[in-house]
Length: 182
Image (tube, helix red, strand yellow):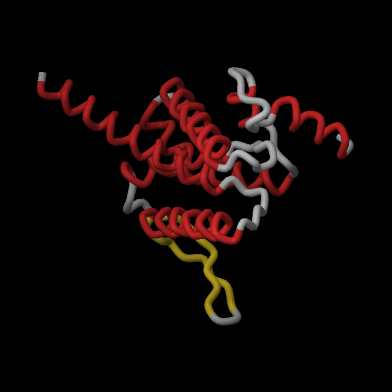
């Protein structure tokens, strides 16, 4: 796909203050700015998504996934209105991370860690990986707002998607507990 074709696709189906409608709120989640963007998202979905989907079932997983993406995209668009059109599944996947944090905080995640000049693979509890991920996004969001340096990453969308996932995880726990008492 040529750069012009991708630019036209992003303008038409990406989410921005100039293009907020029922279609773009969904389609922006399925367009990516390049291979690195989509591969990064797919890595996080591969590591965390299967476990969450197994617990939720495919339909509930899809609903929460899309809802987190919608909420994250809308927050990014409304709270930082002059940003470029946003694309990608990052807010949706961030929602999956939020669910994972609450339901599987001590599951071990294999991570590649730098130790001085060497790299090693370590099993780290998910709570450390996900809190570090969240804090990194929070600090990057703050820094980009304070410095007015827009680096075309929807950090605020990531944060809101993650918090939406946490909300859905808590809501589902409360619903399950209510039915268990009956």
